[in-house]
Amino acid sequence: MAILTFLLIGWVLSWFKFQHLFIKAFKELFKLEITSASYYFVFFCIGLFGDLVLFIQGSYEVILIDG
Image (cartoon, rainbow, N blue to C red; front, side, top):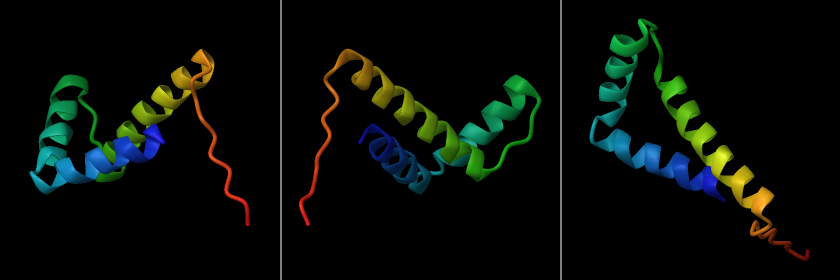
């Protein structure tokens, strides 16, 4: 669930041109060119890390849908 949450946050921040700020900052700090796909990949990784932490702590809830 954290993965979707962070991807949604990244999408909302892109409305305010945060994506361009992030790409420029990354270029200045690491001298690497990145794209908007990399921007969303960073948010995906943050969400994945959050989900892994919850899973390791044992507080991760799996929602099963009966069909």
